[in-house]
Image (tube, rainbow, N blue to C red; front, side, top):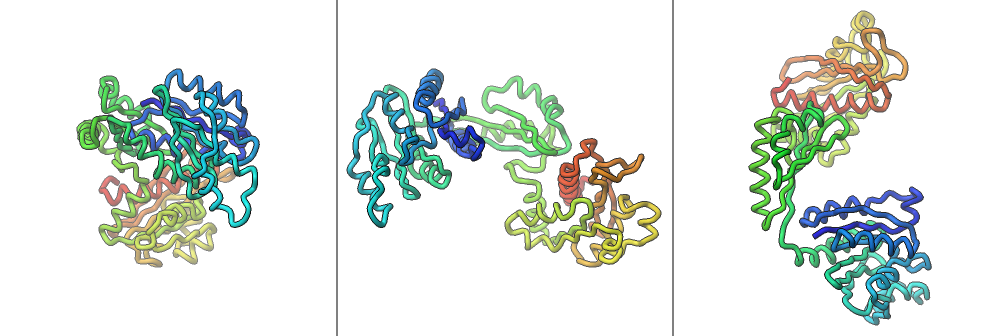
Length: 411
C-alpha cells in the first residue's frame, strides 16, 4: 500500500510550529509495511487541499491528513475531504453526545461542526484527548484517514484507532534494523558494501550520514515478521564481515547508552573532567535515564587554578606544555581518579575558539585523557571546522568514543 502524508495548517508554512506529525507517521507506517511516497503540506485553503488530494491519488491509494479538524471557520479539512469523495457531511448524533461530555457547561456553538461527518463509508476514530474526532473513508479503492493536528491527540488516535484498521488490511510486514557506526564516512561505507547494495532487492540497504557518524538501515518486507527478521539477519551477517570494526550498535542505540550498558554489566563507575567542553560531556551522560548508577561526576575545570586545585595538575606542566596538551589531559585524568576513585576517568582540554590556538595547535585541536585499568593515556584530535559549538560537541563525542574503545579493547 502506498501512502501520502498531508499535513494541513498555515502555521506550519509560517514556521510557527515544527511538523513532527509527518516524522511520527512515517515511522509508524513504514513499520506496518506501508510505503510512504510523499510528504505534503498546505495551508488552510480549500482549493489547494483538494488539488493536493488529487495529486496524491495519482500515485497512492491512501492519504493520511493531520490538522484542520478544529471548531473554527478555517478548519475545513473534513468538509473538503467529503466534497472530494462526493460525500455529504451530516450530524452524527452519537458523536454529538460524546462531544458534549467535553464541556462542563453549554457547548460553544462553533464546536457543533465537530459532530458532522461524511454520511457514508465513514468510520469514526475516537479522540479521548480532545474535541476533534478523526475519521476514515474507504471508497472506490481509496482510503483517507483524517487525524487531528496536536501530537498529543494525533499519536494516541493513530496507535489506538487507526493502526488496528490498517493492520487488518496489510498482507506484509516491514522490519528494519539501524546499524550505527563511527570511524567510517558515508561514501566509504557505501563503497565497502557496494556489491551488496547494487544487487539488493529485499532486504534493502540505505546509508544516512549524521553528526560524526553514519547509520546503515537494513529493511525487509515479507509476509511475516519472522521471515523479514531472518532476511535482515542474513544480510547483517555479510555486513559484519565487511565493516564489523566500525559498528557500535545493531539496534539503533546511541553510543552513550551502549557505553553505560557495558559499564553497568561490568559494575564500573565513570567520571569526567572537562575544560573546553564546559560540561557538555556530563550533560550528554545525565540526559540518559538511569545514568546515575554508572556516572559519578563531571568536574568543569576551566581555568589553570581549577585544574591545579581540583585535579592536582602541576603548574610546571601547564607552563611547559600549555593547558591544551597531552600532558595536561593525562594529569587531569589522574587527578580525577584520585578525587573520585572511578574505574574509568576521562578528561578533555583544547582550543574551542574562536580565539586561541597556536601554529602547531590550531583552533579545533583538543586532547582526550583516559585512565583505565591503571593506565593513563592521551589522544589528540582536530577538526578543521573551527566553529566553537561544533568543536565542543565533537570533543564530547570523542570522549565517549574513547571510553567505548577502551571498554572494547580497541585503543
